[in-house]
Amino acid sequence: MAQPTQQAQVVGVRPLSPTVRELVLSPLEGTLSFKPGQWVSLKLPVGEHQPLNRAYSMAEPETASGHLVLAFDRVSHGLGSEYLFTLKEGDHVVLSGPYGNFVVPDPLTKDLVFVARYTGIVPIRCILKHLFAVPQAREVTLIYGAPARAELIYQDEFTALAATHRNFHYVPTILNRQEAGSECRPEAEIVASLFGDRRDLFPMICGVKAFVRPLRAHFTERGFGRRELQHETYD
Image 1 (spheres, rainbow, N blue to C red):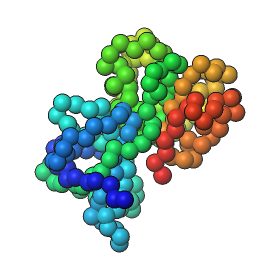
Image 2: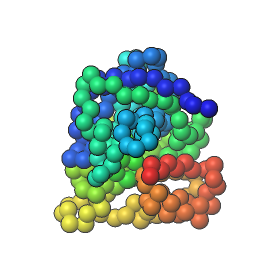
Image 3: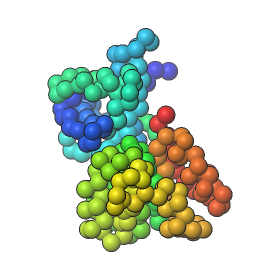
């Protein structure tokens, strides 16, 4: 059965890094209610078999305006991202959703460990903004890797959040070891050094499959069951 779709208007565009852009959409036929961590499907008028369906996570929780904030990287020769990079304020796109189960457990009974690489940070940023909109009792750690310091999107936000909330711990890491003065350890190594064999955690991992699968295996080898962690991939 086809999923209901609706038109949305582009009301904002801004660059987040040399290769990542943020897109703000205003649904025109009804407010979209979603959980932080979920995504929408955009129906793009490109490619041989139109529409081209592409999934993009919300970067911010629901707001009174009803706007949806998405963020995406520009993939070389990627039909979807190349098209989205041409959009400007006033343009329209078709979307459906929300979808996905990459959400924080309710009730939350364990400390959270987020591990993201590159644009895998997008749904996690949405979750963090929601979590810290109210006092948060649990310890929350974010380990975030990117190919270069300039690609650590929302970096200033996470640094400020860590300075404001003693229970939020931010560990950025740069995959390019030639950037002097930067933490350059792989995310899995950081996870192991910070948490060892701790089981009183709820890990949430987001990125491409080649990144997520080894990290998921790291936790399952330490006894985490299928329902004791969340993961999301976007390739």
